[in-house]
Image (tube, rainbow, N blue to C red; front, side):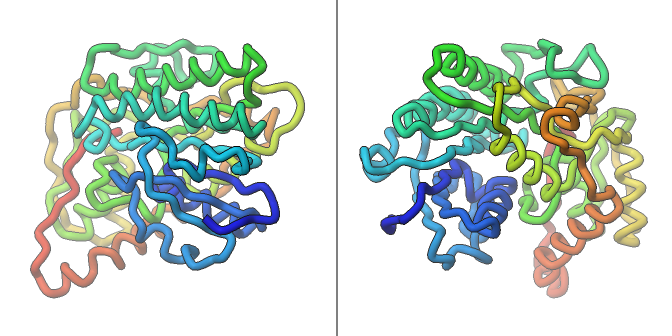
Length: 340
């Protein structure tokens, strides 16, 4: 890493979908940024537009393993640490559940230790999955959740719950200045074709003329937040001064059914894809909508990008990604996955 004149910001998981947008926003704001990523699910391609920026460094490493020597050196004193180092889509986090769980627990512990030593603010990217299949709707931060601790999604759900426990234990002990964001469904450019979440699934299948997979009857609901809005919320949370606010929901409170999302995507793409129904995956939440009154009150934050605008941008992104193979007829990929 190059020597820096100011304290940098470390973004673990910075080559992922949300992480790369966060790195880009921090650079645009004038910060020095170090991206730490194992590239298990993150991609160097996500960093292409800014990786030559002299205020940016990339470190390839896994937070489950000991941190690289450069990050453990006494001279390395980041101003803030964002922990987004965990796969977030069901096919990716269930591909290696042990590693997913350890990423949330061991990785969070390692980064909290670094935050303690460097007196850096620590920002944990938690998830709406800590609420499980919620019995309280919309979900408020005081709700403890309804999670199956032994189900196929538990590696992610319980991993993030444990990460929150560690984070708030450090706060209670006065060992770190922490912020925790519970992130709800987020979408936008740089999602992967095989991401496995409903927005990318439906858009990619529609663009390829493949059957669109709807799990269950399509009556389950989600609330979709465009990635630039989510990043704005993370930045506001990281810069919030005063009394630590506890966990804060970040997401779009406008709720719609999966079937409604499919109709919107079909209209946008002009696709004639058929809709195929399959059984709901195990522990798939039936309803999901954040109560963001705390974010509005504490951070002055609320999403601003309408769903129609965000979907247009996301369709354009995937159309560009899929265009060459679709034009020459060699690509028959669909985007299999879950409806999370």
